[in-house]
Image (cartoon, rainbow, N blue to C red):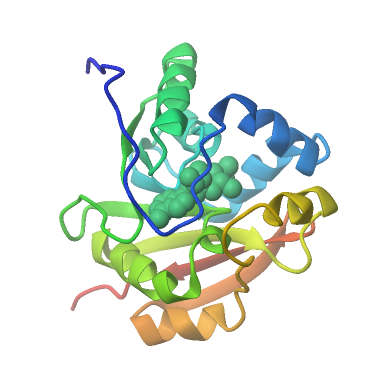
Length: 213
Ligand SMILES: C[S@@+](CC[C@H](N)C(=O)[O-])C[C@H]1O[C@@H](n2cnc3c(N)ncnc32)[C@H](O)[C@@H]1O
């Protein structure tokens, strides 16, 4: 597919990151050099399999998206920031990965119902206002196939100091994720399961969309 550079940001009330050039370095610092372990432990937990069709919501510069594609899945990443999408496309092209990227937002996913075996959403929920989160999770549920899986990664407690300093410059509070498991069940997910991943200040929550009878 040919991509032009004529991309623009998608409006959202979420906390958009536009500094794509520095994002990967920032993740390296915040994870204290453990980004590869972080991505691997996410994908191990997600149990990504070859041939799966996966959507990565809030993909940023696409590191996780590309890592999932390297495991044989076909992966689409969406992010509201055109800069992030451009950077992700460059990285995927360099890696020759089966990953494509488009501008988009979690609260209005531009995909038909029941499309994906899995939705990944890594380090994004805390960028969404509490008033948006349920709508975003509902959208993820809508696009997952019956029996498919949601995989959420976020901070389990106080995030690293550098991240908290960065959050001071955001226009809204760092959002808590209390009661996430119950909220997922209320929204229609089942089999929620939460486990620590690497680094230890992150958790990975998995949940499934009920299979139709
Ligand atoms: C901390 S980054 C995480 C990026 C990537 N998932 C990762 O694991 O490195 C949060 C991302 O969420 C994106 N974001 C903000 N608001 C969003 C929204 N409404 N829908 C989808 N993504 C959003 C930001 O632009 C940013 O790229």
